Figure (cartoon, rainbow, N blue to C red):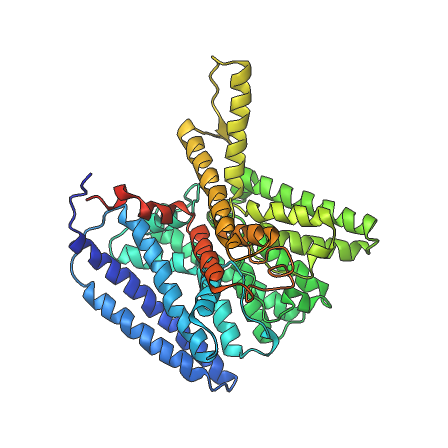
Length: 489
């Protein structure tokens, strides 16, 4: 079916939006340059060159897109994907310039992992890594958490485009709009995200982190990204349990719908409390924490406070897809391993910075199952399915079922692809699951909480990178681009 719009006219939109994002990315590179200069690192030239190159190309694209364009709604799917790919491509430059021995595949893997807030890494020796590079990893996760979305929403209204449209192609938010205009909502989302980041940084610093660690870990915690400055991940701070509790609190907050957090800030606290997915998320989290605490305390004779602290931190880290680890939970026993594997698929609430399947899809799938049970008993009866107080039609239930199918099918296909590189069953399966769910660590000796992805073959790294990007873009946004119907004008 023809859209009636010339592709030549539409490309001006692509030039302009991607150009603006690259200019903004260059600004972040300049900020990283300042950090490297502050710590007297000679690598500041690498960030400065990256900023000049990225900013120049961004300016050229903005100039090429100065002509009038026409927006076609379905082009937003392609625009969303190209924005992420462009950011990922240019973000590899500092990695390759600072770590000269780093291959392009490793730089791309690290960058995609950062931007998608997955937290999987191919780097080791983080404890002695240049501060500028650690800051670059952290701020990439921070802008990947929700920063790119807010940037795009801020830019697109100025171009007379509905900014919330781009937000919805990437992030399935079913919450009510709290503010009447998308520009107002995007500004409030950005302020809430920034406010949580600053509060997290401040508490980290107040309770024992140095200033640099507080800033970088604050960014990666609120982004539910999980990049740490140490090979031991967040376990480096195990001597200060209060830091684990603070991180757990902010990971939970970041897993709640951003729109409802905005509503709470504006005084509508009941919306957050009554939301069915928020209640389900908190219930699942607390039940898993209680189960693991009991299991460690009784079966492993571990002190109760220590059991609660590490169970809370690691359960929250996995269910929110942050991917931090305070210790190797794979050694906690079979119950813990299986439970963490299940939590890998869960994810937080819709419209949050988390990845995964999302709680609301699980709830809607359960509604569909209940309806099928009722139909088996009363084939001719008619029920109105409700999610909270809202009726749910069969079309929505069908779309959720379709997404769940493609979600698990993607994990199965990716695991099959990884198995071609002689990876064992656990590594291939959990590597695929953690990529699509944007969690970070998998299970097993290679990619478990104590390992990283550096030992994988280049082909396996590319597959996982693709999986991370697809997972962050909710899979269907990317797969749609490979259907013939999308390209018919």
